Length: 380
Image 1 (cartoon, rainbow, N blue to C red):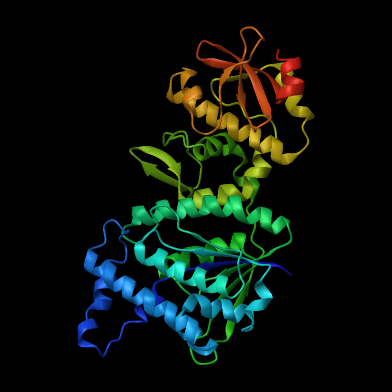
Image 2 (image 1 turned 180 degrees about the vertical axis):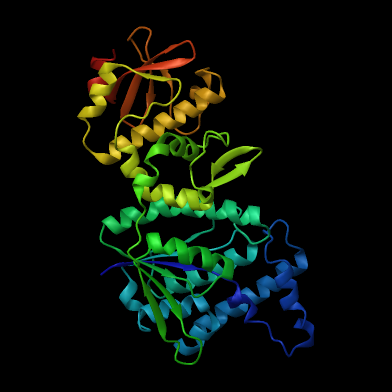
């Protein structure tokens, strides 16, 4: 079976290259440790020189030693070699995602691993460094994890549907990132792997547990959760009843927490594929409801309701001014429908539109369908 192997990347591949017996390098480890959360721009030049030297050594070592030495040099590669029982040629059709921190040390270590894997014929290898992800602060770490969860939701389910086995290789990386991905992996991975310490480097495989989210618990809060997912900040009163672990707070407004986003991703398809949600500032005409009810594909219903949540959020924030819909960078593309009189439309996908009329701070939604067939021929 083809695999997707997601490997967390630490910095031990660099620090393992320090010659501790060399007096000139005795403080290199502490310098790297103290600057581990810095990006390239903020890293002092003397530290960049240390990193560059260690990078050169790491590349040279990986290219000139045998598999046991490679596995000792890199925790990440140790896990990958363990998956393939030391025969990397088995993984030429697999995808490898290297998850790095958004730091100079994390990215360079990931580049070393990526280059090595590509030289071994594993060409479907790429690096993903969530924007801002570091252990510099709780806030920075949480923002990076949020970005990672969004990326996972967009990336992993389509690959699983294509019959790939999803493997989280958590041998490397910072302990905090490992801890989060161990929990996240229970939702996205088919198995999580670690390596026993010692000469044998035996693989520890944790199979996916039969965890599922009880969607019925969140059904009463579908509208609030959809708005939160769209980026709305709601009052504590509006989110009353939603479990506290799913919520964060920014400037007195409630938002989805990292775990809230994770849980929402697991249950949103079931919740959004039901009846039309009565979002504020949106009025559904009977023709629009009829169009919606004719749709049977769950993913189409979900995409529509996600877009409606975003439109509702933007209108609430602008007090009903539709100009904000024209400026939105999320692809709504609100505009007049050409040669159809006083009716507007906005985009759900590249080809699917909703026709509407703006009135007194609200949108009256008339039709939903393909732009060149349903919408252009029957906008009202």
